Image (cartoon, rainbow, N blue to C red; front, side):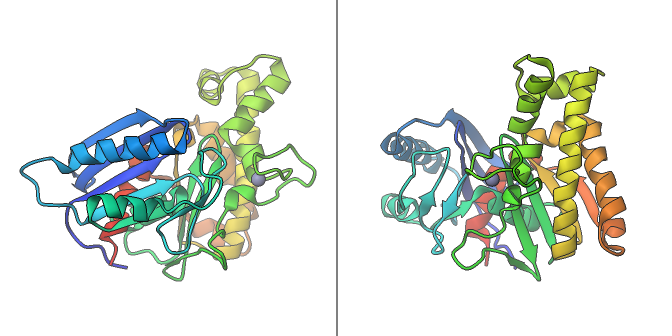
Length: 303
Ligand SMILES: [Zn+2]
């Protein structure tokens, strides 16, 4: 997998916020913008077009190679459509890529956000030159992009590589996907907020609980540490299945206090099969804060 050089626009379309980046690379960014994601699908399309028009009118730069859109959800195998998203108003297949191509006359690629993060990591980040690695996005939910033998793992219908929905505790807490005991229901920001409330009766966001844990609050530390152990169990499964050279972490929980990652990494070192867990690189991605948009911008640059 090689990347072309050139200007590219990346859009990270999320359930609450949408971010745009216009760049030649992470070290040469022309501009970035963020907006609240509108509620209705037609409003989202109109808002995307409006911002893109503004970006493309940027005089003094050559035309972009193309546009990439990372979406929190399932995308079509053609890389042009959104099939389904739990947190966005896309409940039936919608040809988002084709719609934008018609409007702007350049290639548009649509990709699942965690897969885009993995592609961004391979083109611009720490996974350069790696054929076997995994990127885990840790936030409200847990997503993953898995490269195996140099290829992004998609599965038969494009729904594969969803590590967040591996079942870790049978009949465990309810997950957003409808199943019980998924990794996401045990180790995500949503899980941290829920468990802290169960322990203390106090409703706090995951960010607040992490802040308390960092400051030494006992209940918060126990909550975040337990979430980290569940994450570690998920990582052990991934290490045993895929034998990756590295696992990189992105998303809002990448700044979680040490106890989250140290609990997770210890499980990987102690419980993986054979020697795999001793050698695997485990690291928060330096691109973490922007890997969604940077990954989206990498899509049109892939050869
Ligand atoms: Zn699930």
